[in-house]
Image 1 (tube, rainbow, N blue to C red):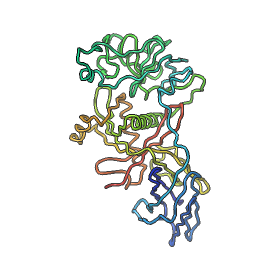
Image 2: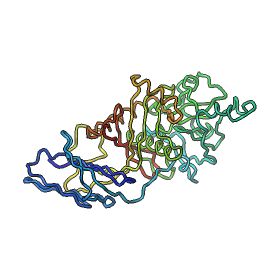
Image 3: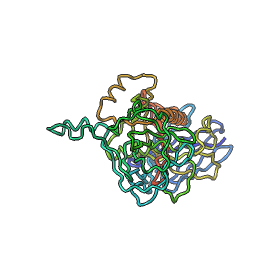
Image 4: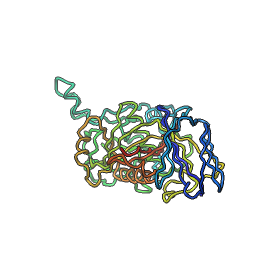
Length: 401
């Protein structure tokens, strides 16, 4: 039985927690040596050496807190450094404003939704409650009353979790789930009104891609479409990876641009599914798993390693989450929903449920002592670098208090 390692480094604080498991099957005495670039585990049975990535450096003299946690292994706290560039993901606005033609695919099956489109204008939409704020800004009647923010031909308007395009840009407009339903002429593009809007589905797999918000505009949710330069070949991305990277990208973007760290994830009808609390995005994770646990089938992206394999360092975000589907913690939910510091993110119902499952499975991969903080659960997600693919993973948790 090999030794598993988990090293979690806070880049800014230069502090780390090191967890070694799989030591129970070894005969005593066991000698563990920590150097700047490697770990050595010596026992009467065998000798192991784990080489760390080049960008990670440990400070052995600072290893002053060592504790054995039953069922998990040996926990150590020490100082560490993780050098190297911190890659940031390309935002949707930055990606679409490049002078390239793009193709939109259904993320579920790969069917082409919009082909070889180059947008002349890529503009962000105002916040979802902009119309109610106008009354506070203007001393005269609302000049924007009964007017909607809808794109013209070759326009792309970006919301928090969706984008709007003109139907004239779609060579073969997607079918609607209810062709007889009426759509009001003036619709606030930032407000989801599923009872009034007509859902847009993929012709091939019938996945819900978005909604028709008017006779001229279609809303596509960014969790349902894959956007690639037309010159780039299409490669299928797993649903888990795609949703994970999309969510991480959104959380990182809001935390840096709006200093928002608390999020309410809700469905198109306003039903609340999740509370998310982003803790930090400067964590570096190094994992070596020679013996996969029961959940290995859910996480094939962390392969088993042999003794000579050097684990890789991954940038991750750390988030706490709380499911609200069972109507528990109503007092906390009401407080978050009524606070200006908590930002609402709207996704299709299926995506909200997928996100809950993803968080639950990732949480089960953590050591038990890192899974909870009070009534919250912890989660880890990989923070992807600048990539034109829209994909993702979520973060590690913190210990109980």
